Image (cartoon, rainbow, N blue to C red; front, side):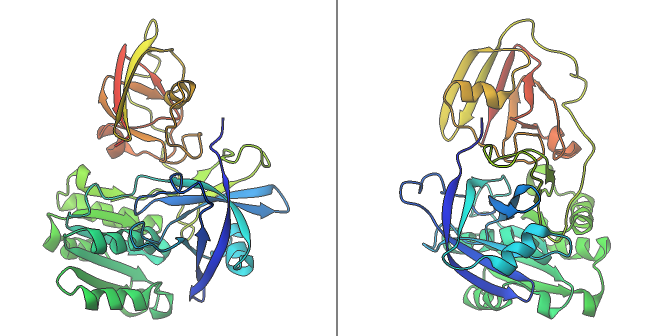
Length: 366
């Protein structure tokens, strides 16, 4: 079973820098609910490919869901990134692209919280969505640390300057340029973040940058619930279903790709209930309960069999779109290429790979 995709028309293309383009889409009539999104989420695009038929790529939304503007992604070309180069070179106003609805969990729980945002390169894309939305609908302070190679690489430079001028009491933007200051060190990041130790931190960018920032936040004692890190993983599945079955998908942000160790739920490996398990689920404000979750059946598949539209994207355990938080009981993940030890310790599991281990399991998608 695959998620329904939609043909979206391109209504605008803006060259943000020499290497980055923002692409805006019109949402088809009748699909407004499917394309409602939270700041920090991403879209999955079907990019045509001569070799594989289609290349599925996930790109973060840079637009805000509350300002009335169009659905917009921002794409930075990478040296070996087929899809990012195709989008920047070929996609123009009037073209159409097949797209899956928004997914992702890199979103603030509250727009009124004080936010400490770290971005590097095109990692600014979801961070920009969060910033735009929080300034319009939230009340908290926002501090943005934005690292780039040089001044010409700064995406949204003009808008960030304007927003900081319009919201001097709420938004502080600090630019870090490698050509001027060199690469930031963990000690420098910790010194910067230390002044905002009560904020909710969000980190997005190339893997070395994210590891450095997360290490600095851990050093400062930021609790897990206030550390949020975007994940960049190569997807091996086919989220478009009826398109070419051998596409390759990746979440491209400056080739920021990593491959965490395959982690399951821990010592529960090999266990399963003797009979059907009881499943309690909270999703979109609704509570569901089932007493027939069969051993070996994945959580996502069981919910789909009940007619419940639970979120997902890759179905392969290689993205976080289907993530749930475990409230009671335990599950085993058959495959996991995206959650790290901190995620698992915090009770996060992948719904598309979770099978029951205990007789009762309670999860929430919130």
